[in-house]
Image 1 (cartoon, rainbow, N blue to C red):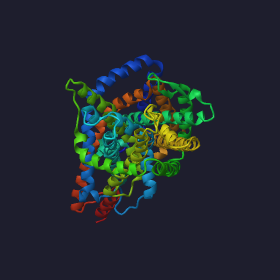
Image 2: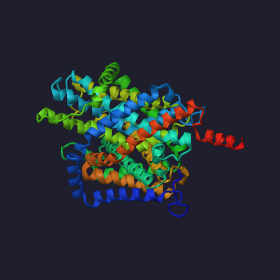
Image 3: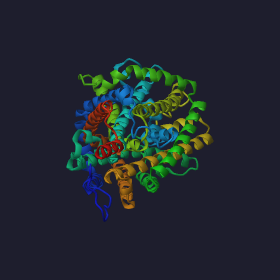
Image 4: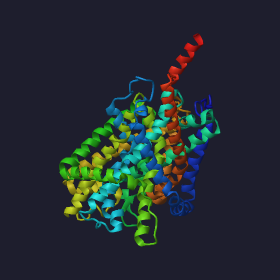
Length: 557
């Protein structure tokens, strides 16, 4: 599948048919938010109440479909034994480094923000509470809080990533196709992916990646600033970092957002220039060590046995309710409770499913890049189970600690009463002495910074790989800088325009085109695997190298 790339000048090694339209669309979004903020805010508000609500069912059922397909491919002996690469090929990275990179680039930032924030939110309001089954902020509400939290951070997210990574990695490492999004559709459309249709697929993937990463960066920047504010308050400085929002809760100031983006995106851009084998791997290993240190703090000084109990009960409740909750689409019956259920699903489940879909080109391509040599069974189980379990442990220990402090009265509403970006720091402030809380908050800020750098670093690498027709050596310094600056402007302009809500709405809309591509990717990888199993049964080669040898032998014979 030849992809036309330029062989000189500014776009040397890049597909101009992909890079230029993608840059144009992202630049339009930035200029729209900066120069027409009133129109942008009004348009996003209308989109939030019309477009998003209209496509909520599509997101819900598509993610449920991803989970089913992953389970079938992993458990069916024929497909599970196929390898992403040549038969017998060894994995490029150790399992520890592999899991570290999966976790760091996939969900690390969001998990830090939501590890306390989401269990607390569902502790106050979730579908069971809205229906009147349990009372809000009561001991009985704890179980349902974690059931819904695990739904959003479990198999739905990671099976979406796994399928995108498998669809790309299988045809790239096994059939010698370029490591880019369009390659995943070659089993369906053949050489047609070399032309306009392939360019369109890659442009859609780049835009979705930028918007998906923008949500992650937006959450991370807000929490990063909140942490700096907590730390600076110990010396009586840093008041300019946070300002009261429209709801009275402190939020990051415009100056703090700009400064944080300059520091974080600058470091990410420098890291991206070193490539996946150096910068990302090194930072991912640091992330994993710091994450375990923070997790140990919550396990020993925080919820401890209570958190482990929440983990066990939460996983059980999640698994037995997974089919029903994955396929439930709330509809309004005109009652107050019905409207509340619909709004809750739009604010939480639909947001998450769109986020994971928008994030999937980035994480999927990254996973495809680092997963060569693994069998499909090992790959899917590793991608879907291990990170999901890590998220569950995090949520149970960190979120369980916050809820326990509120239930016992020790927090006195200090955790529930603050913004989601500050709730992790508020939990540490209640749990520890002032000096210890300062040290722990500093650890969170450092961890957050490395997660942000890793994610943006990876995103820049992936965007340039797509623009370079799957060739990493097509990367050029000025293109790395452009995408780093573009990400900073998207995040900064949207946060200043309307906070994380503005980025959230833009991302959900931007994820729609890629959700169509994602559906086609699922059909394509199923076709590729089925045909390879048929070829294998008849003794026909199924890898590019084996086919070349087979044709050579036939020519000589």
